[in-house]
Figure 1: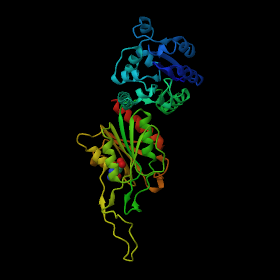
Figure 2: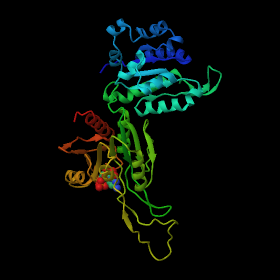
Figure 3: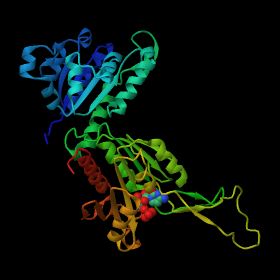
Figure 4: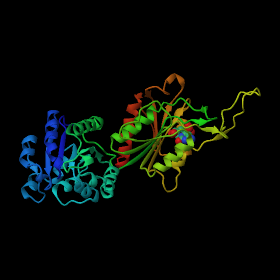
Length: 408
Ligand code: C5P
């Protein structure tokens, strides 16, 4: 792993291009090297000379320059970077990126890259609000590109609204956060970019009446850590969680639910997905007929609570006919014969992998920070050493990425 992080900065046309000079300085102060690609539009606002002076590198501008192509092909420009940053990202370059055009050096590099890409939009508020721009942004984000801003404020054109490029320091912070998050997987590693992940987490609550419920001790720590780890590897991640005392993980789209029925509906709404990880401790039963008013102590003794079975979300996803995620992963919390039960559970539910863990009270797994996992897959069982829930999440996310990449 190289010590110095390398950003390939693509400067497209817009008055905000002047702010990229400041951006280069701030990145270089932090030991991040910057190499610039300047579009023809960008060159109307900032000169190659100033970019080159601040980056202390050549500035690349023209795809058909034979010298550039022989000295530094567009593939090498991408290969020698850990992260591509488009700042400012004009409405035009975003449209070309969304459409997969490669009609100048910048868009050719962007189409050819397998590295993570950030973009900081900058344009007039009406261009920003236009349905075409919004659709392009949605497309780019659905492919795992990371958007920074824009901000609201007064514009060079005299109007007020959303469309100002984020301040250089905001962009620097986003870049630093990105490098910190992907550190464990090596520079620029986003092997799950373009993939969709679905994760369930936490307990469910099954209403007895409007003030009482049935639930369990799940903290949601493991499921939340898995969602964060998958997002850290670039997956577009939906986390469907029951009530927990944890903050929403950054970079993950979170749906909060209460009951198993709501959790199943939210999972189905989040499909299609390439991978589903069911880490929620879903209540196996719910009250057959929850009371609509608070139950009273009326002297006739305690009410009889009739239970009925909840839907099995893992099983439903595993056996979904046409919308089954390509890889379905479940957990098996057991207090005895952990591996034996997990192997049987994998078959019964129809999922691909089971992470079995011992949740007997003496292990401190429920609510605790560590886990001992037996990883059950089609070819056997692997015993993982005791790890923190975060480490389990990162290891699982790496396994998922390896599997998706065809390495497993
Ligand atoms: O059968 P058991 O509840 O032990 O299975 C545990 C696995 O099944 C976990 O992955 C859990 O998230 C999932 N599950 C589910 N819906 C249920 C019950 C369990 O998704 N109703």
